Length: 281
Ligand SMILES: Nc1ncnc2c1ncn2[C@@H]1O[C@H](COP(=O)(O)OP(=O)(O)OP(=O)(O)O)[C@@H](O)[C@H]1O
Ligand SMILES: [Mg+2]
Image (cartoon, rainbow, N blue to C red; front, top):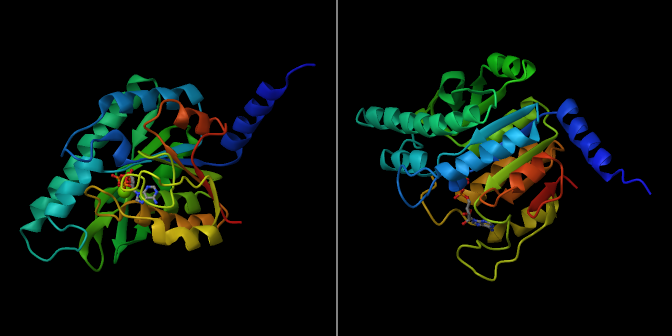
């Protein structure tokens, strides 16, 4: 009998990329060593760039996190709590700059792998109000996508109408973009195998949760922790909380381990991977 499975898979990928946008978050926990400030995992960045190139997916937006480039500087200068003292101005500038440095490494690698990636700086097109996105000039982003570029954004230090400034997490950005662009799916790459009943870095018997509905997610939230390292945006708990509105809109989220080779490739290719799938119902 003829094997149509390849064709079937190809059809699914085409359908996904033609019909809707995919948002891929590459966690700072993946592309940096969060224990050592300003330490990028360049080999991991290169591997992910190659995986993105290999999928040949159009209609993809990448958002990356801050890891040890964003969080320590943001924490040191209390950027998330807003502008309280002029001495923080240099801290804001530093936090934003470190993010552009990490973003530069990601862009270098994508472009070296022949991916037409273009960076979109969140602090230049987004302002928040009390930490929530209030203004978002997304015309260039829409045009980039339409022209078949791969837009790349990141968690950033942004201006805030009430606080002066704050931190906009990559996780909030993912959720907001997914809703604005009516994305068909969100893929969240982190440094653990998925969402577990308890933090797997603290509890070695943690159980991975392969599938959750929104109702089940809300019930299991007590076991979700922050992060074992610096994370000014609430680690896994903050991440999941940000994703809820997008899931409520019917956008499925997969949380997977992007430190493992080929996991992101397979997920982008609509193949089954180890991880946690969270759906509305
Ligand atoms: N129940 C849980 N299941 C899985 N991971 C959990 C859980 N509770 C806490 N965590 C922690 O969440 C961490 C991932 O979140 P974290 O914010 O550190 O990474 P990230 O979002 O990729 O980084 P960044 O914020 O820099 O982008 C994991 O390393 C894990 O230790
Ligand atoms: Mg985080």
